[in-house]
Amino acid sequence: MAGKDTIVAKSSARPKRPLALGSLILPALLVGTVLVSYWLKIQPAQNPGGAASADSTAGLLARGIQAHNAGSLDAALALYRQALQKEPGNHQAHYNIGQIYNARNQNTEARREYEAALRTDPNFLNARLNLGVMLYRERQFGAAADAFREVLRADPNHAQALFNLGISLLELGQVKESIRRLTEALSRQPKQPSTHYHLGLALKRAGEPAKARAALEQAVSLNPRFAAAYRELAKVYESLGQRNLAQEALAKAAALDSQPAK
Image 1: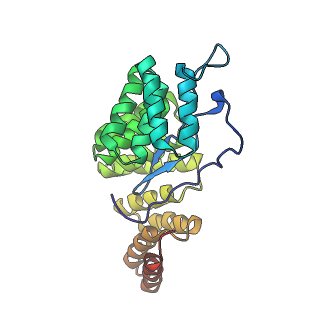
Image 2: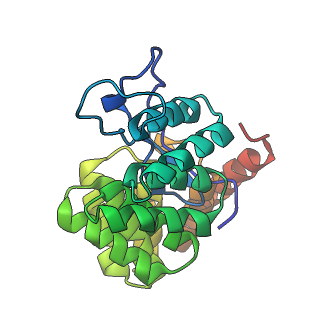
């Protein structure tokens, strides 16, 4: 799964003022070509009774979230663990700890925390989605697909889950169903280059080179630095007898590969 052709969706702008407790949620994840895409969401600390003391569960969570947003992951982790000492089943603390482990590529630990969050709140979709991501990273594609299906049972229009399910099915060799799910994902989020890329891969595998070409061309149109898409496009051009276009696509991929990563 390693490489430099991952397409990472743009994250929302970081807020410029201190965030209110109820406005915070840490990122849900989206499986990408190689890595994971982040959206700035933070799982809120629940505080129905008004202002929380600094050492209460909600207060510790709020302080952890502030440290987390500031990039002080060790401090955030310590605060989340203090919150769990007070309330061992707190799904928000487990989820946010999982996010830290995920950022550190500690997949086993991240998976454990997402599972702990789900034991308390089985309907926690972000945790279910991210558990699927961890299973995908561990190449447990069938289990990952099941996790993404669970998300879709609760929210059939969940674009991230549709995409993740689509690429999991492609790994499982279920090409037609993969095409269907990736097409559904694009109907919700039509400007995701990685979705067009994987749809192109699926269509190529299904023996539909003209449609694969269209999908891959859309991927590089949306992201002109997508070297992997240019390489796959070159293969499709070659299969269609378009050798000049194939050579141009390979040249673009090679040029991108020679450039320093940004």
